[in-house]
Figure 1 (spheres, one colour):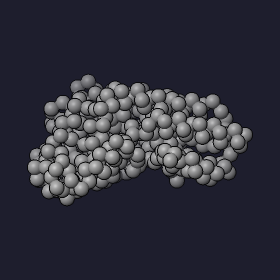
Figure 2: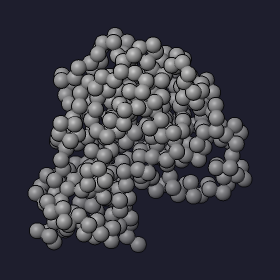
Figure 3: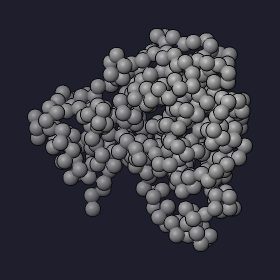
Figure 4: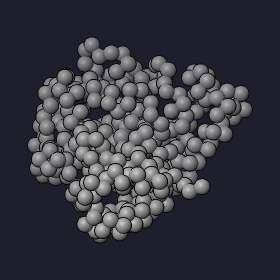
Amino acid sequence: MEPIYNFSAGPAVLPKEVLQQARDEMLDWHGSGMSVMEMSHRGKEFMSIAEKTERDLRELANIPSNYKILFLQGGASSQFSMVPLNLLHGKTKADYINTGQWSTKAIEEASHYCSVNTVASSADKNFTYIPPQDQWHLDPEAAYVHYTSNETIGGVEFHWVPQLDSSGDIPLVVDMSSDILSRPLDITRFGLIYAGAQKNLGPAGLVLVIVREDLLGTPLPGTPTLFDYQVHAKNDSMYNTPPTYALYITGLVFEWLKRKGGLVEMEKTNIAKANLLYELLDSTDFYRCPVAVADRSRMNVPFTLKNPALDNEFLKQAETCGLLQLKGHRSVGGMRASIYNAMPIEGVAKLVAFMKAFASQHA
């Protein structure tokens, strides 16, 4: 049987080895006689899973001990509220960089709690580039600075970390939902990192938060208990029942990343995959990528066909060839290939070969 490659933007492809291990452990995890999804989250079996998952993440991402790791629910969208609720610390303003639809949603939600200063925006060119930092208008009275490191829909990605005041008084906050663990990262540059799991970490239902300890403990008055980071930190993400099976699968993904050589090796592979696809897009006028070259995402590659009337035929033939979920987001149209960590380079090579053949067929 020909291999099937899933280019979905999320929920997205998981490593085959992880799925096979989960299959083998489905009915009986390590001789416990229970499936992980049946376990008490406070039982010794699941606690060992949760503890190892955190240890492996700390090792993979080199997370210092003064940062708390939280495994929460509500997806990354819940953090659009939790960030201002927890990080305003008595201030009334926050800085946001707007580079796409997820940035826009974060700004809209934060505006319920504070005055949002849109430091910079690429809306003038339909979110196809990252505004350079020398054009930003940062507010020295802002409680924090927020950006989205990779816009899943538009396919723009920060390949650099914003440089804030060296005093560190204003923390940097980043939504890394679609590029977390795709490359090494200096965690100490950030006050808080958050990411939905369903793109690069594991299945839907889990959101990861990495937050510096000194930022905890002073939420806005009236903040719901479950929206208080300190509550989750004090209870090791067990204040309420966490998404246990999603956390277990995410832990298997961390083990897989370690076997692959960690984030340094993963970045090399991700660069190779992205280059393979972008080289094709740049070699012909049959396809076009709208994103500025310097800001192209390694995770989500949007492209259009010269003749949009061929879109449906492209998708139909691609699916016949085992290349799935290539339709672009409904807000932008065209195509999108999401090539997260778990997408093997063979999948990208097969896509490129198909695209070359399709272009020749319809030249």
